[in-house]
Amino acid sequence: MIKRNFTDRSQATLIPLYKSLVRSYLEYCCSVWNPHFRKDIELIEGVQRRATKLVKDVEHLHYNDRLEHLELMCLHTRRIRSDIIDTYKIINGIYNVKTELFFDYDQSGRRGHSKKLFKRRSRLDIRKFAFSNRIVDR
Image (cartoon, rainbow, N blue to C red):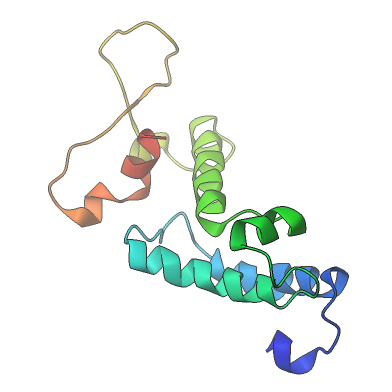
């Protein structure tokens, strides 16, 4: 849509358009739906890869160099960052939800702070890659 409707290919035009029109759809509910298969991650990242190639003067650069030049993060890193921010808000009571619904605290009496998270064991992928389990490793 951006490629067909806008002739100006400058960074000052395309990056705000991409951030407001495209990236919001790619990151919608990323805490709930976070792809864990490599093929799904590459498909979503491919959308950003194509969008950064539209920018004049950086289309010849490698993808990581384009991201650095355009001051963007890869979408996988943004999803991880979003998960960590949401976890902080849940644990510290900024979100009005019950913490016990999402996390179990480690009650084994180890040294450190009182908000260490305990990872629930699961056999099924639906629980293994859920928000509360995938964030504990990070």
